[in-house]
Image (cartoon, one colour):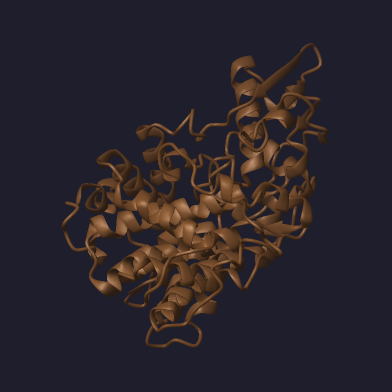
Amino acid sequence: MTGALAGTAATLVEHALDAAESASADVLLTARLHVADAVCCAAGGAVGPLGELMVVAARADSPTGPSLPESVDLLATLIHVDEFDALHEESATCPALCVAVAVHLGLRLGSTVDQVLRAVVAGYEATVAAATAGDAPGMYARGLWPSSLFAKLGSAVTAGYLMGLDRQACAHAVAIAATSGCAQLPPDITDGHYTSAGTAARLGLEAARQAALGLVGSLRIFDDGAYPLDATTLTPAGPPAIVSTALKPYPCARPLHAVAEATRGVVEHAGLQPGDIRSITVAVPAPLRRFLNQEAQPETVGGRKCSVTYVTRAAVSGCADDCRTYWRALDLPDVPVSLVAGGAPIDDLYPRSWGARVVVDAGAATYTELVTVPLGAETRPLGRAQLYNKWEGLLKAVSPGESLESWTGPLLSADGGEPFTRRLVPRGAGVGDRDVLV
């Protein structure tokens, strides 16, 4: 495919691929951690009640195994299904969905570890740059889930990079992916929401395969229309987006991370027991309140992960960081929890930071905790020990007794020139003699 590159889609691709090709050793190490984290999240998600249903649905019509697009769809769904996957706060997107494409396509094509990691850097960059230029945080107020559009573009770029598409073909892949638009984000997030993650990754892959065959899209699709991108902010300076993307410490909606952290901080520092607490008042950024609920015992997994009351009570109990807390409704302390307007500085800092204020009324004393930058953010990244603790918790749910070194060690220590093989992918649960992930 020849001809001069033009249009916003082409500008986006140029920027993303430049970031991948110039990625330093430190950036590639970060990408390695993100790949490991995404696959570990998927492995944990696959053994939860919602993930198990997703696996059954994906395998129902595939007795010999799912196709490549089906495999990508399932892995991306499992990456997001426990709300434990990475989030880029300022762009309000989940860029790790492209890892599903990188893993499965890398295995299929016999790519090297270095190629897979650079493809992930490119996917994150395309997702975040497009989302930032498209005011993705503002989509929440319109009832749209930004990742369903922008992570799809990132997945198209990841696929295009591994497939060796030239830059114009890759730009057409992005343009084709964009035509299917954005998924809705209902005010009551339930099971169906998580299928949007798999759909985004799959459509990105399919768009790249279509572009490889010569199909074209409008390279000006973002110049006007439903999802215009601000071309002046499309090629940000600074380190690649993957460096500023948060690895999550809690398997719940990101707006509630600061809530859980602040609540737990008060409980531990003041030495409070659940019975000491009369009530807890929570404040989060106003735009994020739309998809949070205040149900004490939500009926669905997704509902529990987005419940201010349930997550706050879990934090009081010290179990907010455990996936199993959300898989089935637990009998948590009956502490009254109320959600109020955020105000300054919480609203002012959003979307650069997703903070929270928590006020705990303990009768004899009232404690206020303000978290402006939640753990996992760019300026408060998870340390290696914290990240390993997260993976250890997931491993206990997937394969009790296995060591973390045997689970993630091969990927973390593999040489960049080594072929990317199944040996390097952290294992998931088994279905017969097959792994649910790969």
